[in-house]
Length: 116
Image 1 (cartoon, rainbow, N blue to C red):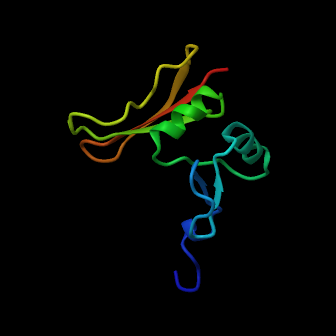
Image 2: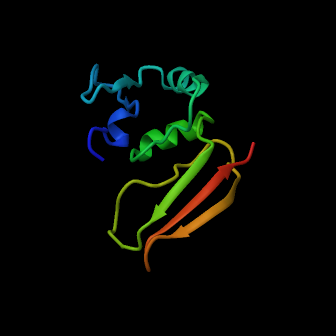
């Protein structure tokens, strides 16, 4: 579409970092007090917050009880290493599978909701 910016350009962006003070693409940087900053983002009106990448950030937000919806894309490739998807939580986290989709003959999206 001409004259319209792509969705990602007009979508507010937040970078989680303990070391950065600013980021490009008009992104806001948070991370000094992750619990308060993400809780404040969740209180704002609007749609969902999407976290892409960052297993350590996801683990921290899970531990803080700030993730409600997990969308895990499985690519069946054995690489032999990498960060764990879920770290050992202090308490058990129960989830319910609410959707699954196959994108091709290999890649699958699993969507889980955290039970409260």
